[in-house]
Length: 365
Image (cartoon, rainbow, N blue to C red; front, side, top):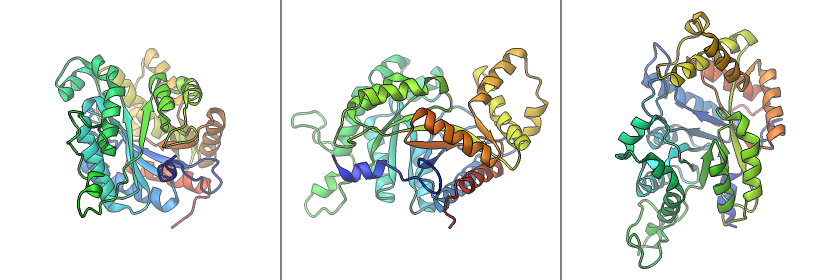
């Protein structure tokens, strides 16, 4: 096993937390706010996360959603790298079928050169959007073919990252730069290190694939909670030791929001629930304000959806959120919790991460 890659993957729990705590950022844009403000909030949260000892900070790829400004993870990560110095940064994730593997290898090789030893490459096989937008991204309407080709795309990307296509392969003389080829070129001093690859999923496909390949796995508990335990079980059962890991390592994405009192926490998470109602009914928009969400007249069907949605969001006071996260870690056996706090305004999100850090006694800078 490559100990360096393993060390880049595994985190260390801080304070009284039983597992490492990390952050997933969707760069949400609320009504009356701009994408510029949302991206500034991301920088503020990344700085807070770094100063308080969160292990990593990932951004997700989404498209054609007015309330989510994270369509270009590599661009955002470059910006965050310029404003942080220690915290791991990564994609949660890049939707590989939307892109040529060489392009992703080049982007994340560039990020690795900007922030050596701090970059994670999380990969998913879903489009991160609706079918029409996915077709526009991929220049094809054969979307199922893209998902089915994911293992082959992953293998190609890995070879570009490692610069190890075999002799005779059509791509043997093509190199992802920045990358390992610079270390093997005459006079080269470029580090041969490259970002560790994670597989992301919300079902069993990527869980099994990650296990078979001996890769770390990230599961989207925040929108597929009922599949979490079966997927993690499948990952562990399928796991084969590799040059990357000698034992399974799985994190789960968790929707969690802490506030100074229960009512305020409820107000804030209701904004995300209304956003999901609109997204699921073909009306995506900016994240509504707490006032609009409270005043919204939910239909019986919408109310049923919202009640189910909120049931899977850990929210309340700091102590209540800590208790909910601890229970989730114990129930799933997750090796790491990646917290996403979605709300209308950046202030509520910042406050949530601050309260969670305080609840676990994470260090203060």
